[in-house]
Image (cartoon, rainbow, N blue to C red):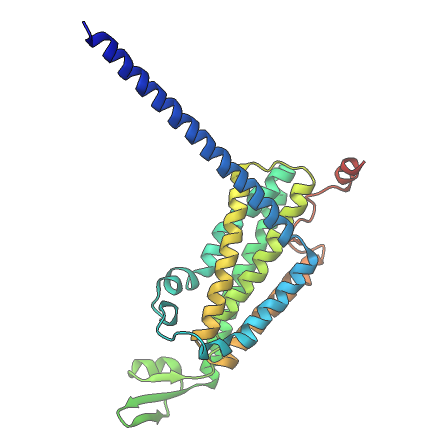
Length: 292
C-alpha cells in the first residue's frame, strides 16, 4: 500500500531534476549568447578603428625587426622551437588554406546578408583569389631567387664540398645540398595573412553600425576569424624568434607588406578591381536615415 506514494515521490523528484537541468541549460545558453554578442561587439570596435589599424602595421614591423632579439631570453628547447611542432605543421604550413576557409566564410556571409546579390558577393570573394595568386607567385619568385643565388654543396664529415653542378635539380638528384638566399616564405605568408585578415574583419564594425542582420552564426564566424588572426600573430612571433636568418625574415615580411600595399592599399581602390572591403555594402541613404 505504500508503494504508490513512493513511486509518485520518485517521479516528482525526477521531474524537478529535469526542470532544474533545463533551467541550467537555458542559463548557460544565455551566458554564452551574451558573451558572444559582447565579444563580437568589442572585437569589431577594436578592429574597426583606423588608428588601431595603423598601429597594427607598426606592431607587425616591430615583431619582425625586434622579435629575433627575444631568442636570447627564451627557452630554446620549447615545443615552438622545433620545425616539426604541431602548430608549424598543421597551421603555418597551411596558413593560406586556413585563412581562405575562415575569412571566405565571413566575407560570404557579410556581403550576401548586406546586399543579397550573388554578383557582388562573388566580386568581394575574388579578393581571396587574388591573394592566392599573390601567394603562389611569391612562392615561385622565392624559389627562383634561391636558384639564381645558390650553389651546390656536398656535406662531408670535414665540412661542405663545393660542386660545380649548374642547378638545384641536378644538385639534389646527385644527393647534395643546394644553398642560396632563402626568403622566409613563412614570414611572408603570416605577415600577408595578418594584414589581409585585419583589413577584411574591420568591415564588421560598419556592418553592425548600419543595423544589418547579425545573428549568432555570423558573430561566431567573425570571432573565429579574430582568434585565427591572434594565432597568426603568435606564430609569426615564434617564427621570427626561432627560425630563419634575420635578413630572410625581414625581406619576407617586407614583401608581404608590399603585396598588401599593392592590393588593398592601391589596386582595390580602382573601379576595375575587386574593390576594397565593404565597397557597395552600406548605402549612404541607409546611414543617413539611421542617424536622422
